[in-house]
Image (cartoon, rainbow, N blue to C red):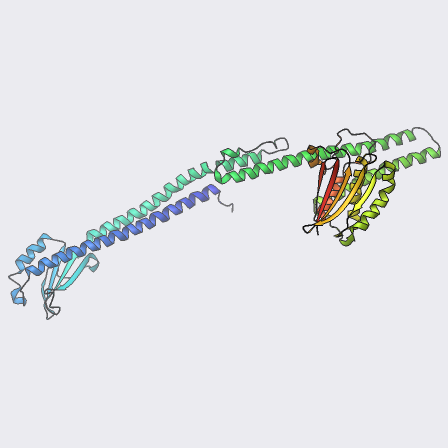
Length: 437
């Protein structure tokens, strides 16, 4: 069964609340009216009792009653809703203006001694007909139920109208969401025109659209970059193979062509492996095999590996400090190798690459810095994007780096629970890695 709409629920809720309030108000009014009538009836009975006592003063027995009855009947005639019964001290009825059986519910009675000081003597019983009060209360109860029904119906209709108008911003959100496509991600809700209750939702909705727009732009750029990076080696492979097969050649020419193709294939394989590693990181599947490592020794091993390249480039390598970290040795070496390779490519001759380890405030800090030109501030946030290169000029077929190294490094650092950032100023560029100690 399909659930009720929000507007219908609000209308029913308004109707139920209105009916409950009207019913409660009606019940309270009915009880107050009934209590008021009871008070008025008792006041009337008390007043008539005083009058009758004065009319019957001095009656000692039934023989004294006849001479007083005309005045009593005259008083009762002035108040047709009243009835009187006089009972002697012996329990015999001396007078009854309402003989026979009557409905007790139609009367309100008051019994009292004729003489207030003689409780065991003659007694007077006054009956007040309250049928008109009962009819009034019944009519009022019917009006209450009718009012409850009409108020519930009116409130439901008004509630439906109010709910529809109040939910119009939500309908607008639904229309905007239904119209979202790859070509309309720039659509935004007007936050300033939203009700206070929906302003936060509108902000979240716009923020979601902004994230989608950014993600789609990145995905489009990523697809274009993949096509660009794969086109060059594939074009080289096709061209070289076609040239070799265009006519018979010497065995050495075939061997040289195969070696060249092997280099391009290795580059493609490394690119695919890097992309698979990034895909695992995106889905939380990059799980490091942690072991306690002496970072000083690990860095020294990498520096020994890069020593020959640094010497050829005229760059000095240095490590400072030491620390221990539970990490995956292979992943950590890959991340640091990417940073060192990146530093070597951008450090001018006579420059320096410095790796510094420190423990501060319960966190391990590893800083990989190199001297050289500063990176513009507007490029720093994008350094870790896939296929991003600070130099916009792409050199077709000549570069060995596809622009995945820093993206891989960030994924590896985050898989270890750390963070990485870049700072560049005063002739130094520093990549700062921070891990929980």
